Image (cartoon, rainbow, N blue to C red; front, side, top):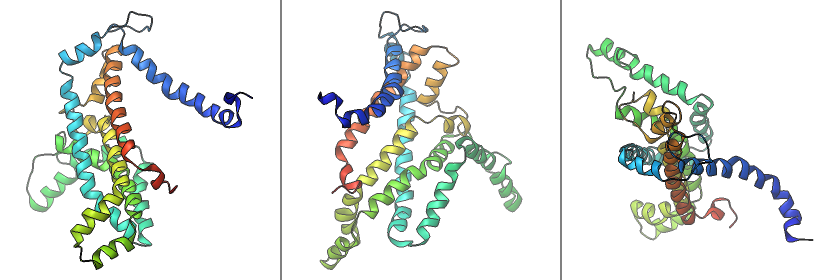
Length: 282
């Protein structure tokens, strides 16, 4: 029997076909359209780099810069916010950790847009926050809505679970006995954190940072609903190219650059992450 028809290959064949049709196929089509002349809707054209050249000429790098800046800001803020919570869930909360998990996971059952519109009502001028301040203190502060801080707030709120749960997994892999041994040998709390806790929890930290960064980099609803177009992110430019401008090659070129950047980052980080250790294989 040929090696291609061994039972293992036959078993994996449906998954392989699914990945080719549902994952590789669309990516290849995006790449193909990105090399087509602008505003064409057929793949039977002479390939060209005109779309990639126009991206530089039309200053689309501004959208990329905004997306990168907001994604990095979201990662840093969520690390600061989620690390103490994750430490408590992994080491301190005990039976209450399940309750915290439920409270964090429940919002995921509600549409992201509905949750963001809830923040619109909260931040709107004369809305819940502004109206309450006026009622209690007879004071008026400028509305946070439709500003960069509002976008960051939305990104932090939406992607918090994607940072928290990998951090919990990472911190749960740190043996308490190792930290206790280091303390007995005279290490300070900061030394234990820097030399033992953080390195051992790094796989979870890196996975959380990677998930949040990739998701925030391609986010769209936060900038449109909470930002009011005060900032145009790259996902907004991609949507506009595919819809209003009806320029599929331009949208495909922008998508190809975003996929290339994200894919390079993911593969680089996966080389640094010990997945076997995370999955308990060794």
